[in-house]
Amino acid sequence: MKRVLLIQPPLEDFYTTPIRLYPLGLLYVSRVFQKLGFQVEILDCLNPPKKRVRPLPEKFSYLRPYLGRPLFFKNFQHFGLTVEEAVLKAGESRPDFIGINSSFAAYFSPASELARRLKEKYHIPLIIGGNQATAAAAEIKDRAPWVDLVVGGQAERVLPEFLRKAGYLPAGQETEPFDWKELQPAHELLLPGVYRIGKKNYLSLQASRGCPHSCSFCNVHLVFGRLPDYRSVSSVLEEMRWNYERRQVRIFNFEDDNLSTNRDWFREFLEAVASDEVLTGSELTFMNGLGPENLDSELLALMKRAGVRKLDLSWVSGNQSLRQKHHRPQKKDEPQFFELLKEARRLGFFVTVYLILGLPGQTKEEIIETTEKLLALDVLVGPSVFYLTPGSELHRTLPLPPEIAGDWDMYRATALAVETEELKRRDLIELFLDIRRRNLERRDKTFRFSAF
Ligand code: B12
Ligand code: SF4
Image (cartoon, rainbow, N blue to C red; front, side):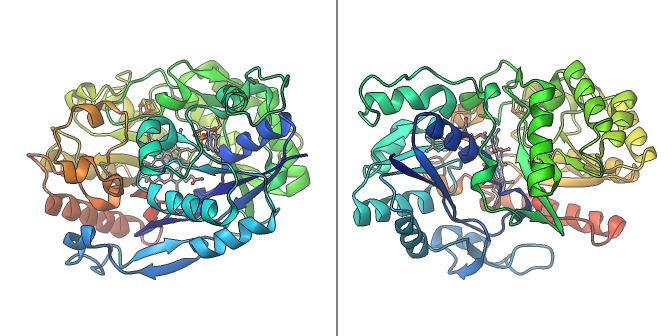
């Protein structure tokens, strides 16, 4: 049986979010390979996400005056295995074949460097997939010619055909696409007990794919499309129960892009979790954020019963016409949203509302005003500095200098790369620091860097 090694590469940035590095995409990819007759191992270079300080890359030197200021980042860091360590570890699996995940433009460099070194040492076929591989397949072929195959899209749908065409499957093998909803991600391939939040084991999962909206800054439709596609409630519960019983998982983090789009599904799901006899004491989190459009007091009460304690809600901006301009869902206006927040606080949820800082057309005054209004409702504000995602509407239409548009390292919030007429880099940094300070004043110690 052929052996495939799937790798989550290391990354380099000023920070990361260790409680969300679960390699969910690769667990689906693993299952597809297994179904095609491969033996699979996973090398997660980000577990543990060991930090090593790196010299500040010259291209980010404009951040030097701010580094180390209270509430700002201190150092540029390498997270996880070094490339040398990863190459050695990979060899221990004696793979016939290596697959690398490339989700982020910003972290393409370490992924590509790892791929190059693996090719140099082992001379075996290398494939790469993930959001970035989907959004920029042609450029990756140019930038990383040592990669044999760039696979765009969902592995379940496209991988069998890609492998067949490249001659990596035995002649005559079935290459029909798989239905992702019929597959359970291969959690069993990860070491048990090493993905933890505090003292509890957690995992990330997905109950739906596809989002019907077209927010100007988002590119997830390139991988998952615009048609919401939900698993059955029973299949999601089966995955949760298996991990609860066999791997003592107690926190289930949904990485869906828009889980509450289908209100009926969400309600049925929450009811099922709340009354499930196995999942007692579990916590559900939605760290990728829930859209507030379809949430209401009935759903909030149900969420509470199902073990949700923290709510991460995306609002993007307090200015309705700006939200409209960037094609945000429009179902709730400010008074309705604020009513929802009050109800959530009344029920005792710990609420963070996420705003983007630096959307084209956004002003400093609006951000300050929205932040104050939200803080007055006793919720935290998560400031998320605008960054480019390849293939999004803003990526296509924003006029940007080539040293930014052409350099994927700049496609990260921490680069504060995109300045607009209204908001320059200094404004963005000051707003970011002010919001963090205001959060801290209100909620001492509870604010996390993950909000960046
Ligand atoms: C969870 C998540 C994170 C986690 C890390 C996840 C991880 N394991 O590394 C955290 C919170 C740390 C994170 C951070 C960031 N993220 Co993020 N994140 C996500 C999110 C919400 C879910 C990822 C996921 O699990 N998807 C579900 C799985 C099933 O899908 P998938 O990974 O795409 O895998 C499928 C296919 O891509 C393919 N596939 C994947 N890998 C491979 C490999 C091979 C070999 C093959 C064949 C196929 C294949 O098959 C899989 C199954 O269908 C995505 C959005 C999204 N919906 O995907 C954004 C997303 C990946 N993040 C994004 C970005 C930009 C960031 C940041 C860099 C933003 C910032 N602040 O600067 C930060 C970095 C912060 C930091 N310093 O850590 C962008 C990437 C866009 C891009 N191309 O650059 C995304 C797409 C969101 C967006 N549109 O803005 N993120
Ligand atoms: S940002 Fe969220 S709501 Fe908007 S298109 Fe992307 S996934 Fe959908």
